[in-house]
Image (cartoon, rainbow, N blue to C red):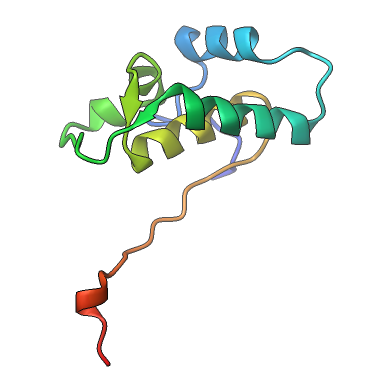
Length: 106
């Protein structure tokens, strides 16, 4: 899988994503400037809500997330990756499992 393809979750070909990209980015930006603007857009445009967890895979599509006003870390990551791919910047997820301090062995 290349990191530019549209997929079920990273559905940047959806009109809602396309409209957001056209509204948010002028044409004369470099790839670095686009990446910074999109990062800032997702960081500031969707309030972080760690308690909003869904078990429905439909809720993790970027076209669904873009219509919400909040998002958890996974949702905001999916949206940013879709926006980056939509402007031709390769992007993908890396999933990690975190442990709390109480789980660390001393």
